[in-house]
Image 1 (cartoon, rainbow, N blue to C red):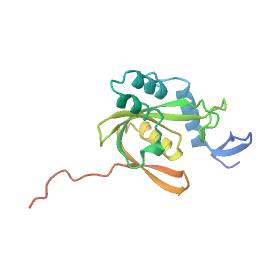
Image 2: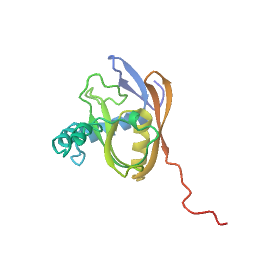
Image 3: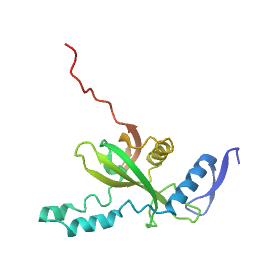
Length: 176
C-alpha cells in the first residue's frame, strides 16, 4: 500500500486502498451522521406535512414534489447553499462511495435557497464531487455559498455532477 493510503471496505466485501484524506473525510461524515441535526426536517415527513396542510387540490397534488429532490434534479439551478448535515441511508440499493465503518452508506442533506424563486428547500446527494466540495466549503467557513450544479451527461440516466460558483452578473448600467 502506498504512503498516505489506508484500507477501506468495498460494497462486495473486498478491500481497497484509499487516500488517507478520503478516510478522514469518511470518519468525519460518520461522526456527523452519528450526531443527528434535528434542525433538518426529514424530507419524507415534510412531504406528508405538505399534503396534510394543503388548502387546495393543486397544493395537495404538488406538495410531495420536493420530498426526495436530489442534486441530479438541480442541474443548472442557481442556489445558495446555507447548511448541510450528514445522514445514513436506509435504502440497501443506495449508491454512495461514502460508507461508514458500520457498513452503512452516508449522504448529505443540504439546505439551500433557489435564486429563481427565493424558495428555501432541502435536497440530498451522495454525488462524490458535490459532497467533497460542500465539505471543503464548510471546512473553510465559506457557507453560505452561491453555486450552481453542472452536469456532464454520460449516457442513459448517468451524469457526473459538479458544483461550480454561481456566475457573476453585471448589476449596473454601462457608463455611457
